[in-house]
Structures are given as structure tokens and as C-alpha cells.
Image (cartoon, rainbow, N blue to C red; front, top):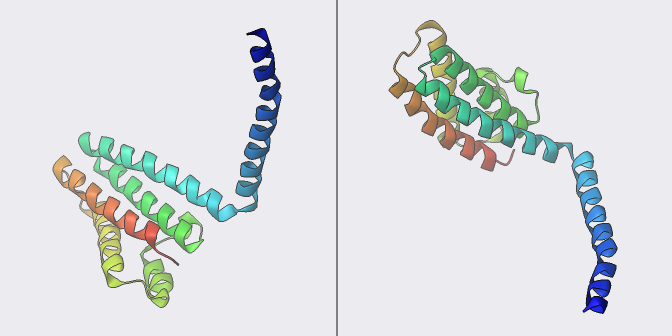
Length: 150
């Protein structure tokens, strides 16, 4: 029995070394691939932002809701187009996506969401049901953007 434990413990340093090498390679892969790193970062921002949108809709905070919705669109489009998120506006759709032959089925919902965000600045939507109804539209549009090969 003691000999079995002794032999099993001899494998622990080998497993630790293999694990350390695997972790190191993964870290190097992320360090050498900024697009992958940004894709993962944006995915986390989107997950957190969608939770925040649901909370803001239930609290009926329309200004913060639309600011967050706009930021999520900027982040996802920025990642897909390899542009800074802060430079993404409605004009980017025409300048960058149309020349890349992005289908209208993707562009139309994007334009509608941008337009809704712009309208909300001047005529805020007050109902939490209206805010909550925008979340599935945003989720569908973000899924389409994530699958987009640009």
C-alpha cells in the first residue's frame, strides 16, 4: 500500500510540469493574438452588458439603457471591423459594412437599433416593456455580427 502511494506521488511533479507548460502556451497564444484577446474581452463585455440592460429595463432607466445598448453595438462592431469601439457610429455601417457586402438582413436591424438609440436621446422611451422588447432584437443582431466574417 505504501509503495502505491509512493509511486503515485512520483507522478505529481510531472503532471504539474505538463500543466504549467499548457498554461504558459495558452498565455503566449493570447499574447501573440490580439484579435483573439479582443474577441474574448468583447464577449465578456457583451455578457455583462446584456445583464445590465435587463436590470436597467426593469428599473425603467431609459437614458442609461440606451447608452449601454449603444456601447454594446460599438464594442461588437469595433471587434468585428478591428476599429476602436469609440469610433463606431451609424455612418460606419455605410463606410465599412456595405463595401464588404454584408447582407441587408444584418444591416437593417443594425440601422434600426442605431436609429432607436438616436431617437431615444430626443424622445425617451418611458415604458420598461418597450425597453425589455429591445433586448431580444439586440441579442439577435449581436449573434449575427459575431458570425459575420469581415
